[in-house]
Length: 400
Image 1: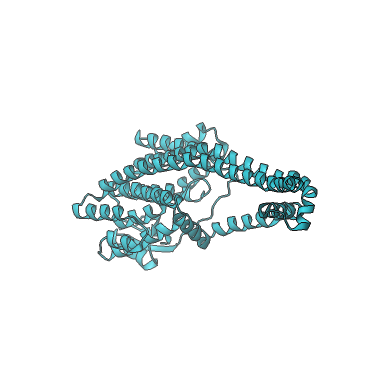
Image 2: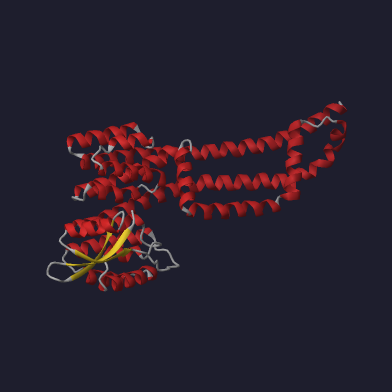
């Protein structure tokens, strides 16, 4: 849903500014009227992001969120807390961002609005959770949660990357060895096989190997151009809304990996959704924030449609089940939580269970990659060796 920036007048005549998420301008006016405010000006909130060329490491951001939460919890005013973090932070890019955030907050912007101006530094999940914290009066808790989410995500990323280093090394080495064999080693055998080729007695594996070798020698370097071009186009396409939706759908449908991606996305959604409900944020607002926490456009779209049904007074479990994007146990858990009026606690417990189960799946998948890469490399090298030895055996038999 779009956001609107408003200027409103209180009953005392004092003006105030802020932002609201709503379907249209009349809805913003009605919300303000419900708060005993008279709308003076309502306009769409357009984000003009500030360009930051250097990225801020996730660990640095997590530490900043945690420190800011501690300062606010200790009673330090927001502007002073940001100023303290800006002066003590050793990362120049984050210090520059905090300087701009301090200026925007000093000018009357909310912390979430100031953070939203830096999308390359602060993820949409972080700004959404902070906005909910400001609206619900639990900013410190929201910042602690963001720090925890960031740390967990970075731990998972580090563990997966560390486990993939050796399989990736095997893959790169295997490709290099096979390419070297095809381009430099195999052509030296071609004169030896010329007579068998003229007689039509050259084995099929050798014919295939020689054809691939000749193609690599003639067009190997030219293959780099379409490969690089395709990679560049895919990266650009995935950055668009349509491309991101397609990419997220492909990840969910990918055999073996799709179940892990789906479980992690649902766990993130449950964690954020449960936390917001636990802190008193209304269910519709919680759904609007938590759907982006999944990190998957397909699931976020299904959750957004479910939120529309909830706004009409319907159950949350039914539309989620109808989308076909969520496992049966998740739907049953939602239904039980709604009936027992313990949805927030059940969501948090389910998120913990799902995260532990998914981590075990990731560890198993990563451990299987190493022998799989060794097997693929062995099969390729074995094919090259067999394709070269078969003509030798044929020549030896003709002289016997």
